[in-house]
Image (cartoon, rainbow, N blue to C red):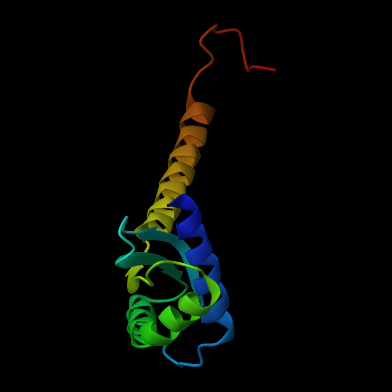
Length: 127
């Protein structure tokens, strides 16, 4: 299933960037594909650069282009059945950015606290 998911991700990435001319679809990156074991459907996780409104518009545009993308998969990947595609926003990237921001804030606060803390040995500044 991993190879199937990776093959679908590659085909979808190529066709979304090269073939789709829908103005609603912004800068989209296919981050992962999860295909059902019976190949009946596949969840396509995408990351969209922009605001919440632009993300929603991109997902609507991708959903409306689903038939074209499924035909591209059928033409390029030999499979018993071509899965029905479902496009979802990948929240993992947003969570990663948020965690990075929190870590940077915490590191900045630690730097402020350690600069104001006295030397535990009591014999002047550390070298």
